[in-house]
Image 1 (cartoon, rainbow, N blue to C red):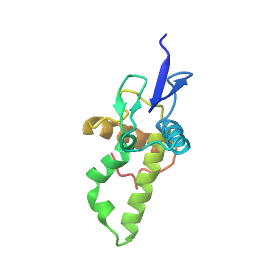
Image 2: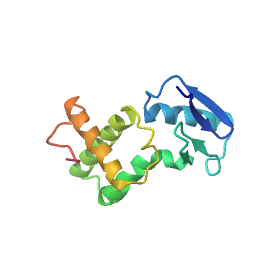
Image 3: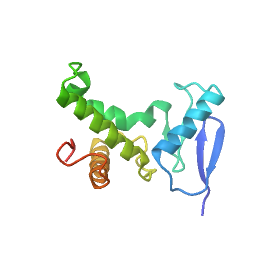
Amino acid sequence: MDKLILKIGTHKVELQNKNTTLRKVKTVVNSFFKLYALDKKTTKIVLPNDTILSYADLNTFKDFARVIFPAQFLDSSESEANVLFMDNLLKIQGVLYSMPIDWNLVGTKDGKKILALYKNANKKAIETEVVNSETTLIG
């Protein structure tokens, strides 16, 4: 089996296996950026499947949510409905970031694939009672 290597600029991290989460990847990448004062705009991240990303690409899921729910992100009224919506969105994103990573989807800009991931995370959030089915936002 080929070694699984995550490259952060000139630094290489050999993964023990492919089973990890996006949260853990982001944590390691953030630590490398801080410790070695890497430039977030120019430093490239190379995934084990040779996909090349920028630092900003690790936030694709959050950026996608801002695109599909712009009205909620722009609402500063602090209405009860919007506060609940945003709270649930953060909980679902937390589930999404803690799910086993699919290396082929990290950094994707494919909206259908990202929506499918959100739907899976939403389903898991309901199953694990992180959110309840009455207040869920992605069916």
